[in-house]
Length: 188
Image (cartoon, rainbow, N blue to C red; front, top):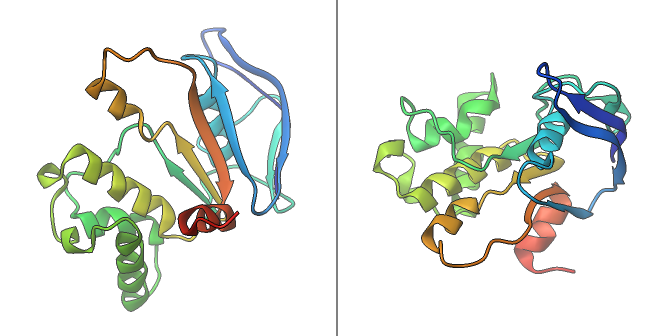
């Protein structure tokens, strides 16, 4: 279970991005956070991911405070943010740490299979299309089999393809691994 307790964030320049945010996300639930540009969605996801610290408030996952990046939390950013000096497989396996090589290879292959890019394992990021690069970023977020998957407008690059379409509210999603698996299979 993920809980946010009275989350706030004020930046050093005095801009208050968030105030008094509280919520609970149970295993299997999917939560979408909607709002206009600049309303704090990305800031909230950075706090949940442990990439930034709330003040005040606490982010709690399975009863323990999240105080830094956490293997149980996967993040897909608005842009792929791939390391250009690593192959696709290297980018996907980057967060696997000191696991045995055979385990890392198997997990990377499984994650690449989930996003349809097994054949791109040895390719460099510069050789990928924008959509393929984002799928690599999704595989990187999934490879550790996180309990929580954070999606920060991962499809926002599609807006550039249709500038004539009116833009509505954007979304940031929070879900659990079970919810992502259920959605992937089409389960209710």
